[in-house]
Image 1 (cartoon, rainbow, N blue to C red):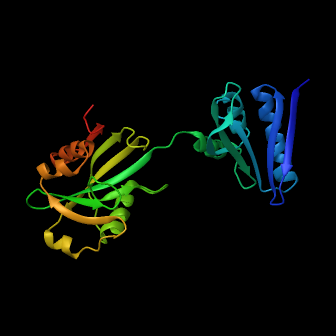
Image 2 (image 1 turned 30 degrees about the vertical axis):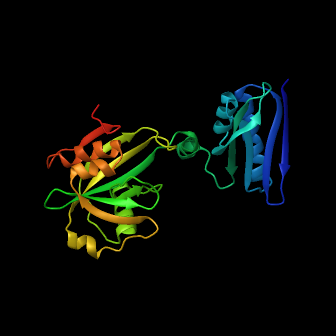
Image 3 (image 1 turned 90 degrees about the horizontal axis):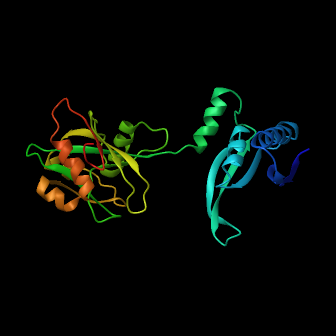
Length: 260
C-alpha cells in the first residue's frame, strides 16, 4: 500500500505540471516520478514537465533530482508555513531533450543543483614609472582594474580579453596569472573568485588612443600606489599591492586579499 496521489495538469503548450499529496519514501517517490516523466515525455510527446517543492524538503528534493529533474530556480519565501513564517520554493523541470541516464545525465542534473561561484577576471597594466591603470566606472564610487565578470563557459583569460576590449576598445595580449583571490560576500554580492592577469606595459599615449565604453567607463588613469589606496576598496588595494610586488615567476593565492 502506498499513500500517494499524483496530480498532472497539461497546458496547451505541451507542458505538464506535476504535484502530489500523501507521504511515501524517497525511493518510491523517485520511481513514481521517473515513470510519470517517461510516460508524459516519451509516451505522450510532451516537451516539458515541471514541479515545485519546499526548499527544506531535502528528501523529496533528492528524489526529484534522482528522477532526472533539474533545478531551475528558487521562489524566495513563497510558501507560508503553519507558524506564520515563510519558506523558499524550488522549481524543478525535465525536458524531453534532456539526457537523463548515464554519467552525462547524472552530472547534468547535479550541475543544476550544486553551488556555483561568480568568477571575475581583471588585468594589471603598468607604465615605466610603476603607476597602475585604474578605471572609474559609471556604476560605483570606487575605481577598479580593467576587466569584469567572466561569462558562463568562458575561460577566465579570454573573459579578461573580452572585458578589456569592451571597456577600453583594445585587443590586449593578456599575460600570466598573478593573483587568485577569494572574495567574501560584499554589498549584496555572494562570495566570488577574482583572478588578476598581467596586462603588460602602457603609456599615456596609449590611454589617449583608447575608445572607452561610455555606458561603463567614465575615465582611466595611471596612478601611483598611494593614490590607488584612496580610489580602491581596501580589499582591492590589498590585492593590487600584492600583485605589483610579485617577482617574474611568482603567483599568489589569497583570501579576502590576504595570504592565508
